Image (cartoon, rainbow, N blue to C red; front, top):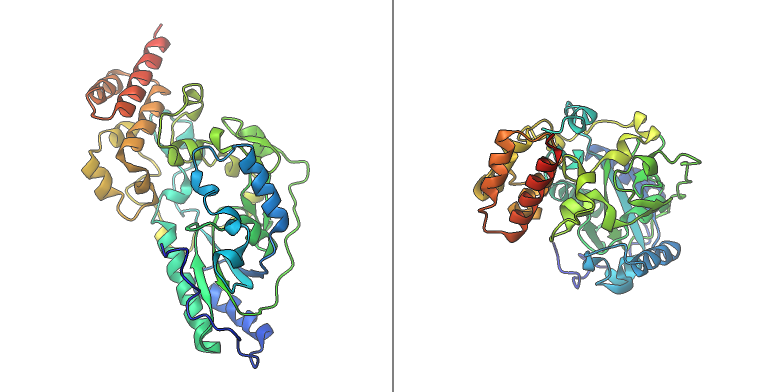
Length: 369
């Protein structure tokens, strides 16, 4: 990831006045489609309302241990402070639901299987989106000459979702994900910060209405009020962001979810319109859409590193991987092989792994008649 102190690439103090920016925007949308983006929108840098909401969320401590959420002050909500000279943000989305993936509900209903969030079944999206955003910037540069830009994909202090909503790519739903009425919510977001004075798009209106399906479906009640997720309760946070022990009272609620949670999206009625990913990078790798927990629990650290090379899962590390799987095994039906595997992990060098393995063994013993 480039250093935050870096300037916009090729920053120009005075973008070319002869450019027909309305025509350029039409070209940008076309180039975006050719590069695999399902939509491209443009907005300005005013995030005052989102900033208030974000600071209130931080003030309530709902970011948990994600200290990076407050590390950069207001740069997250003030793009021109993050990258000097920014006047417009080109926001893009790219569908990621892997085609042909095993049915999520079937996996969630089988306690011997491992459920992994659909976004993580393929290649790390950061690399894919950044590469295509760079290609989009190159095409713009070929059309208008040098201009200032910087590409982001969930890789810096950027309020991606409010920017996408302002750019007309969808609205922020009650589960805090961005939804489009014709495309659902199974997509990634990316941005090009730029100094080009492009015409902006109207923001998206919100269409959740009285629906609260996502709130009712959340296994841990993490959607504490409409449009507000307490990360400390969210399974995605607990299995991905948290690097310490998972709170014991929440462990039984994780079920067999070992990396992320899609429940709020699975029940969202707008996702009946969602499309599968067209990008082959997001196809299923290593059979992770339908795999036994025990098989994954037996991976050595070397197996983990090799099999998940190029995967977003790799960043949690082998220790947290084993922690998560131990909890899932404790939530399952048990059996001699499961007990043997958990007892073997009681010899692990990590105290956290041993703790979660012991919890799972105790929980399984409590289920015995």
